[in-house]
Length: 68
Image 1 (cartoon, rainbow, N blue to C red):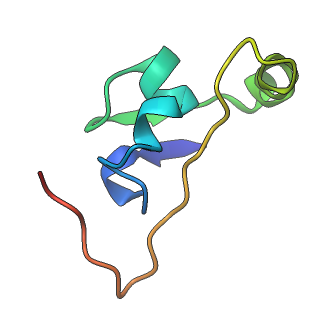
Image 2: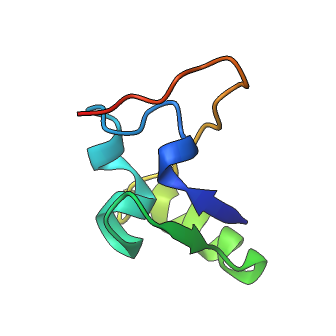
C-alpha cells in the first residue's frame, strides 16, 4: 500500500498525530509504502495498543487539501 499523507482527509489535523504513519514510519508530507506482509502484524500491535492505528483516508476528488 502506498500512502501519501497529503492525500489524506486528516492531513495536518489532530488525528494525523495519532496515526501509524506519523508516529512510527515517518513525518507526514512524504510518501511511504507498506508491504502487505506487514498488514497483519501491524494490525495485531495496533489492536493491543502498542502502536497507533493507520488513520489514512483518501480524499475524494472534490476535497481540497488543508494547508497550515
